[in-house]
Image (cartoon, rainbow, N blue to C red; front, top):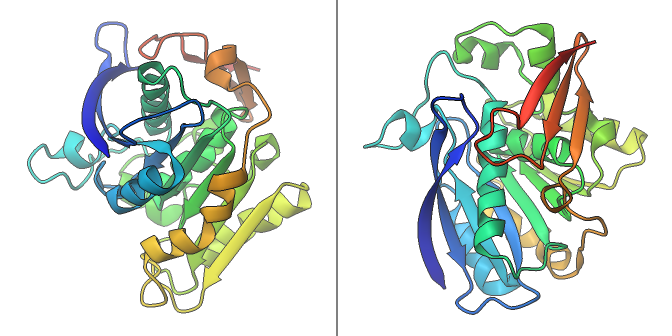
Length: 292
């Protein structure tokens, strides 16, 4: 397998684009059927969190795997230890753009890949990010896989973020509220004894909402599993149990948002979030807020 890192500029301000570093683990000889899979780490984690799953995926399923740092967390917060987060913390908006932009950069580096085979996986806040990514870029993924994921900012997470959020800021971070915009199949897993991100507060309501909307969702709950899913199972073994058939057979019938230059609009109550995927990674016009 090939392993390397790259650094790119993500959307930030006109005078200072945000440098973000990503890890790639990829097949040595990609071909026309090679796909891409985005991996997103948790709150306070870093790009190496899911390298066991990345190595397994790249080797077994012919996928270029990319794991992005994102602002205010991990090595961006602490360049030596790679753990922790800023306070105040953005808590899942700009981080989504950092991760999606790392995927866009990977697609630029691997121009010959099969863009019908773009997948995503994330755990905890990383699960929140990939679920939001399936809303912010709704035509891009063949499936999204969330493990022990946040689905919105509840009071405990707002407290550790150390800031207040307006109504539209809470709305744009709420996956369940915007689940009607999801177009790809969703895989979910959660431990029933998770005290960090409650299964009953996050996973089960999202599963119920997706099913009520007629969306394709597969959910697995591990009895007695904590945030790591242990002692019920390890996250790697849960991943291996959930994913093989889908990685071999799932394909996205739509043109992905980045290739199509899609303009996405999300109604967040008092304001509309407008995203323009035709814009460069660092463009301050990549997204904007519009009063209703």
